[in-house]
Length: 152
Ligand SMILES: [Zn+2]
Image 1 (cartoon, protein in one colour):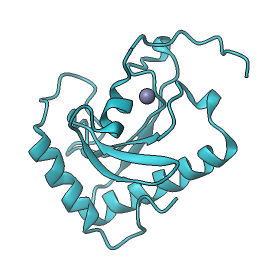
Image 2 (cartoon, protein in one colour):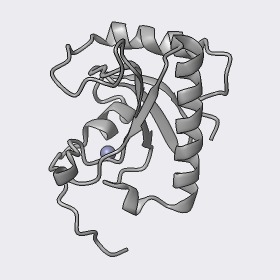
Image 3 (cartoon, helix red, strand yellow):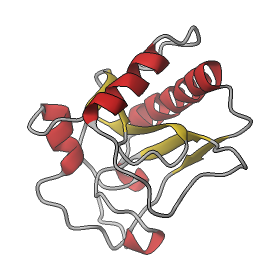
């Protein structure tokens, strides 16, 4: 595989791989062979999740077709769960490739977040939630009656 032209964040070890392996505590809502859904401690919307591949690679450009398909299915299911549980008027999904696009962690990740009162999501300073608080968000979303989030 040829390298992309993107400037990538330097993060060794990778925070997301540490979360998936359990080396560092973090709320994992669910995972399958190909994808995992994390509850970020930086909640920029209402029900802000991170959908990531379980395999480590930096950007969308390295994803296989099978991974891309699992990611979009999981994104749709995560959005459906946020809709079901939090009943927001908008749901934002965003993903950044390269530091010039404000990618901060060098492991592909998509953000999914219900919009805030007044609209949009918060890209400024947000309080860092405790693991107990993000575990609570995971419990709330796990009670959704929509699609299972980590089916694939
Ligand atoms: Zn990683």
